[in-house]
Length: 200
Image (cartoon, rainbow, N blue to C red; front, side):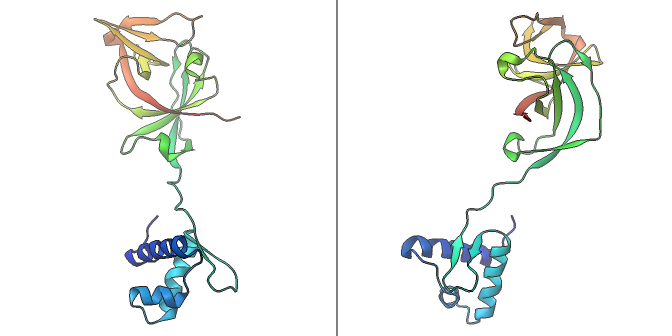
């Protein structure tokens, strides 16, 4: 949220004032703290803070300013790049849909996308059929990371990565299923899973 320097100073002043005294400052007291002689100027700054949700003002009451906690970052809109199998590999689907994702699930400055999961091979990692995974687009991954891998150039799958010399094992998190083992040259990492979304 963009605040001017003066808005930030006034917000911090009101918050400290309320913490110390238990009631809010008057517009005159705010003005005096910043050398502002015009109450109209103070009112304008306060009104902007109210509009941005950082102050709440009681209607028609003096000393009614209540500081509000700053809102967290809003959701990040990411492309929904299709469906990925958490079972047997299936073909990747490229769509133009988007999905809103909580900002804390998206690595900063990373190129990310979302895939819908089909199948239950990652059930022991709490990734279920119908879930959405937030994927950081990368071409390299460490052993043990949950990756979206393209097998033989066209089949996308969601598995844990394990390297074995010239081979790559893509491990399910479901004891009923066998790993996929292929030559390393036949596997391309598309990204690493960074978050999980579930709709009930």
